[in-house]
Structures are given as structure tokens and as C-alpha cells.
Length: 248
Image 1 (cartoon, rainbow, N blue to C red):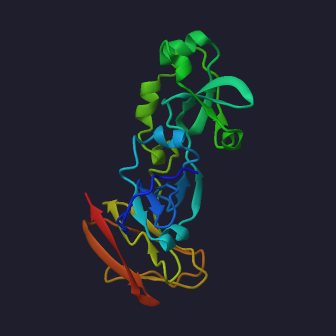
Image 2 (image 1 turned 60 degrees about the horizontal axis):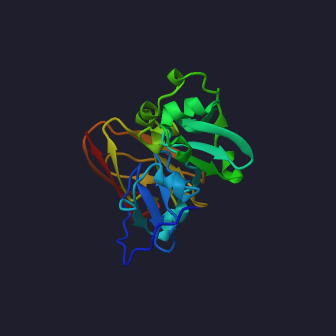
Image 3 (image 1 turned 90 degrees about the vertical axis):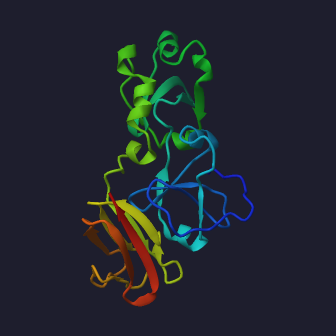
């Protein structure tokens, strides 16, 4: 699991949105927060740096908020960034969208795709993380794969995992953690789903919308069709408050 460098007195925020990088106050592990309300793990430093140049945009959130978010799985390499191989398999692969690996059958083809120093453009994937990938069809010609085009088609982890069109999800955690995130920004037309991941009943209450009482694991969805800031609270615990900002 990837750990970010320790920063002194990093500001703690409860405001974050899908696509943000997050970590807890007490832990250095960095996660990707997705539209489905889950956090995705970077299995190692090389995977992280295939997507990001540094840790400058990582947000520190309360430990209780981080713990309320379920794990969604591991992030895979940015498609097109490098070729990869696994310790127990001599074959070299390119990474296509969605974590699909495609065998590169010849040195000539690898050289055409990644240049004369193609052998410096290969990273090893540990056997433990090989299960995060799928094996696709091997490359036959250079026309089958263009690294730059593949990278362009997957500019974000959400798009690579086909999560970008998913509902935006807010977790309802314990009374201590409350709504996670507490402040989120979405586009007009987005649907927001609240999922009760606590062991007690909760509800979503505001002047503009109200959910029924949500039993554990039940959810409530609302589409936001107008621009504005919508404050809401937990009907059973009014002091637990949050905000959704809707923008064009």
C-alpha cells in the first residue's frame, strides 16, 4: 500500500469530491475517492506515479471519515504509461483500458511502441497484484495499440474503471463520522445516493428533500437539477450536517 511523505500540520478537511486523493490524519496511506463512494488503494509507488507526478493534491481527512468509506479495490497502471510484466511470467504486456493486459509478441513491436529504450519502459507487477488485471488479446501489429491514444482515453482512474458515469455516493457512517464527505460538489443533473453504512437507522433531511428512514445498508437517491448549495442533516441526529454544492 502506498504511503505519502509525512507533512507537518497538514490541514484536515471534510470537503472532498469524486476524483480526489485522500488520506487519514493518522495514516500515510493514500487512496483515490471515486463516484461510488469507495476508496481505491494504490498497491505501490510505481502504480501511483503512473497517474500522478507528486503528492501535492492529497487531502487529509478525519480518521473517522476515512474509516467510514468502504474499500473498492486496487488501482491499476495508467493505460499506455508503461509496459509491464509479472515475476512468474516471462511475457511483456501493454496495459489497455480497464486493467486489460495485452501481450507484446516481439522486440520489434515493443521498440516501435516505446522507442529504442523500450526495455527501460517495463515495470514488474508483483504476483499478489496480478489478479487486479485481466488478460486480453495479444497485439498483432502496431495498429492494434497506440500508447498516447490509450492514455488520452483514460485521463482519470474513474474513467479507467468505468466509474465516471456512476451515481455520486455519500456514506452515512456513525454519529461520530456523520456524512462522508460532509461537503461535496457535483454537476447539474447528477444523482446523489446516500448509503447507510452504519448499524443504526438514519435519514437525510433538508428544506428541499427528505428521505425515508434508512435501515442499515438501505439507500436514498435524488437528482439535482438546479444550481445552488443544499444544506441537509440527519433527521435522527440534527447536529449531523452536510452540504451539496451543485454547479454547471
